[in-house]
Amino acid sequence: MRKISLFIASSLDGYIAKPNDDLSFLKLVEKESEDYGYEEFIETIDTLIIGRKTYDYVLKEIGSSHYDNGQRDVYVITRTPRPKVGRTTFYTGNLTDLVKRLKSENGKNIYCDGGAEVINELLKSDLIDEFIISVVPVLLGNGTRLFKDGRPEQLLEFVKVKVFETGLTQLNYKRKE
Image (cartoon, rainbow, N blue to C red):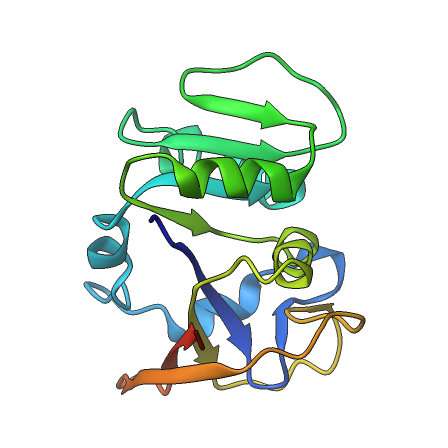
């Protein structure tokens, strides 16, 4: 069965964005030729789930090819119906139903790239199998929290930790069976 993985960066105090969806704190750990395992991770997936706000931000900052490069199916979770573009589907249905369907199909793993609303909806239904969280050495004090209140407690199993020269620490956990 396919698994769904969260691969995301967070401040030490648990924020994935500063107020106004500002991701500039990620630049603190930018280093030429260091992708923090992203390319290796991407090789294990063929499907991506992303919230519309995160998708729009990446579209503006990097371009659509970052997600839809012909190599994977992309599901943008949105409330506003839009026509499919390439392999990108703008999904307005029930997120839990989508993930359960995708997990039952054949293929590589599924990557959840945020945002917080999508992540927390998946957590409420205990659907995230692997957590790869890169902790950026900064305390933001405010912004968009990675984990919101109001979800069930979940036990995780430690897989590994990797520390990088920039001070970024990458934590890897899996859902306890």
